[in-house]
Length: 126
Image (cartoon, rainbow, N blue to C red; front, side):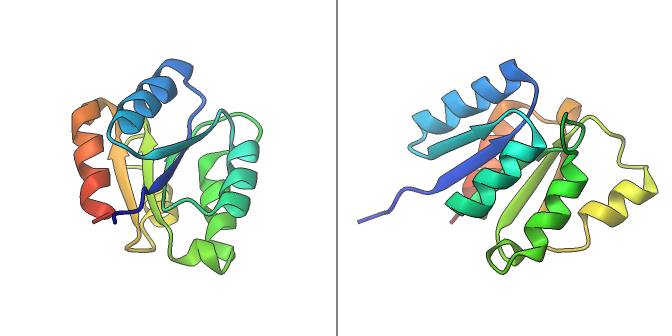
């Protein structure tokens, strides 16, 4: 029997967050969501999802800080994280902060369609 995987999306853009939740829920994933970094970090560290979709620019706590704090936790060292951002990948500090670990993927929102994100999630959670 296949167990359902849990995904946490931490995204302040309501329409994007809800669209991702709807499509992934229809693919039989258990969905958790947070609209800011502070709430997202709390959910991540208590619920231990199988994968996290993480925005970078958010209120209350930015995604880079959330990523660092998750990686400091024993569970968080191995969780798959996909960064979803509008930041440009040419930003050197952004690359350094997000791609130190092979368990972190980076997707520029404007370069990916929702279907592509779902496909990437399914590949990572096989």
